[in-house]
Image (cartoon, rainbow over all chains, first blue to last red; front, side, top):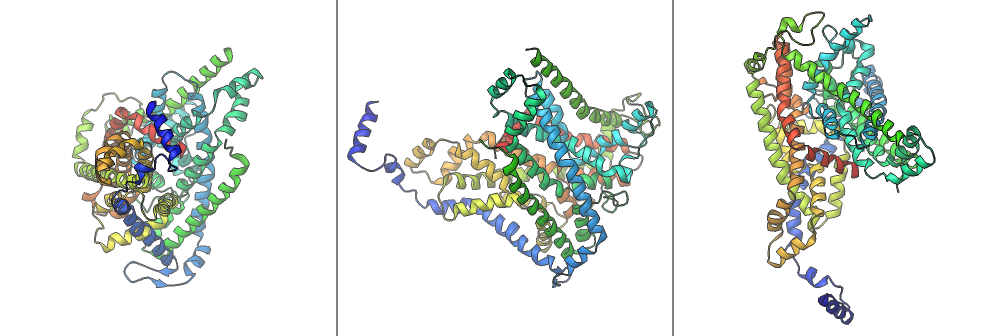
Length: 321
Length: 274
């Protein structure tokens, strides 16, 4: 205490700010150490980000089969894309997948998080149950999903038969393929989103709910008028993140529909062919690296525009304190 | 009060049903892995096998090259974890604690690269590793982790920024250079975050499918997820063993998860704040 008073007296006498003397001791070569320690990322950026971005942009305007050097072809790749029905199909399938997946997973994860957030007993176990699919590889999920949706010996058709209903072809049915892939993806990912929401819900003040209860608001109204607006920053983050990853979905569809065989992935009859699968096929199976790069850039642009739209729209529905 | 109870019991029902939906498919797969092939293909199916074929789990290792796939997976995952821990903590420390030229511009780049979808750079990466003669080797699967991924940098930087200044001031007085301070003070104090980073890198690499599919062509180089898939084409009549193999491949992650659940959840908290 006495020391502090002395310090204050010294400060008044000397206009130099308090922390200065310590900070004034210059660290030898701090800037050089900083650059040196940050250099792994510098290398990363130059070799694996900046170079590749420039290269793939160039490839997208070229003909490139990896055997011969890339040959400038102007807008040919994009012209070809415009008339390529398979490309449009993959774009449509990707949109269909995302439009079903993102809202469904976000909404269900929020509902589960709100239910879990009322200090239920056994929270740890419930959370764990929802996390097991999250930590599984898609290969594990293939056999787990197959136990349920195998048309011949799966659980789902057995149950349908017990109820006297006709069995379904599930993933082998072109109409059901994408909705079922969405269902499985929601099932696998929901625990992850739920935990993000659980963290976000910690910051929603409890007294708001108490006030609403005094005014006679029921659970649904509290959810709609308190939880949903107050959690909207988390929702915004979740929607952006899952949109970006959904547009690049590859592993799940490659594994669940192709079982490790790229030529049958995206089936049946290309009904689940998404953009990433099409890109892979064009680039790595047919070695049309130029065309595949062009597809990648179109995908990137779509994502960029979608993110911009979401950033614009957030002003209308995201509430920051 | 009554309303609260009602809400809670509704919560239990909802979460209970949802937990069943999560777990029952795994139990069904487990049951399938304990059947004979004949029993597995019987219509209508039996949910619980008549006799539990525990020997299936021993037979897994007679399937193709499962032992080799496992070693490849362990190799890739371990090298990735070591690389990520070293590089991300070093870069994270520089961003959190040191002043150097272009620092803020570089940090914007780190955040920016997190936003760039991987699709646009996959093909050039493939071409780079082709030029380096590294196709069909395990190197492309782990080497990038040694060059600090943005997510890990961000995670480590947050952790280091929360360490009080007093610690480093004292060490500075004693004449430690930045690297010594990083090694002696910051690394030991950031152990929980390092654990989180290690777990997430391990899980990501262990489960990864896209990169192995792109880079690996010969079967003996395969990692577990794509190795098991490759068997289903060659070994018909052994589906129950492949299911067992897939479930075995889940065990390491499951063990990590059971013993270190808090690190999984901690990271998601950060994702939520970000």
